[in-house]
Length: 216
Image (tube, one colour):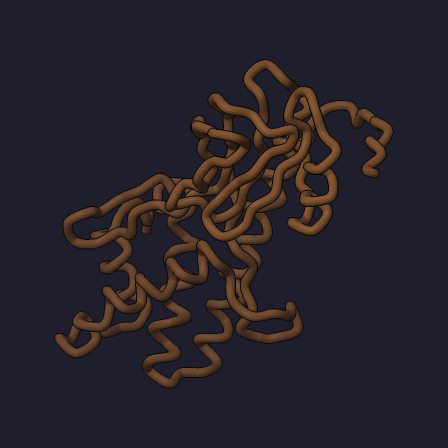
């Protein structure tokens, strides 16, 4: 069964769980919402945890926009989960990350084109500071799928990941531990595979080694 939207996902959940009763159906929105939390944020601190799953970071989540900066500071997009790259348009190398502590030291002695950035709360800061527009690539969280918002780019690209994560939640709710663990293992493997494909696409071609820029 192809999983391409909320309707097909609900149908597959009922079929795999062999449950079409009202009590189970009423829980499906919760299963899907919990699955989305796992898909976007991952769960667990250690791969040794049987319920661990890494966050999905595939091409379906990548987005590029521009952010206005004033005196070196801009606002992180609300739906941003991970920043991939901040760059001056036309600058191939991008602006490199520093921890807030290192950033403060660097900013006190910087001038010229922005080279470093840090994030504190919802604020992105760059140094040397700039006023203008910078381009940002990031992984974004999409609107949840529901009966009224039936699809998004993630379920279109990774319908089976949605299914396995939702089945983990469903069988956990049904207290079918072995089945739940089987589905989270499948989902974890699928997420890891999707992430590896995205990494290979991003770094395909001949590897180029560049010297590190010294940081005072």
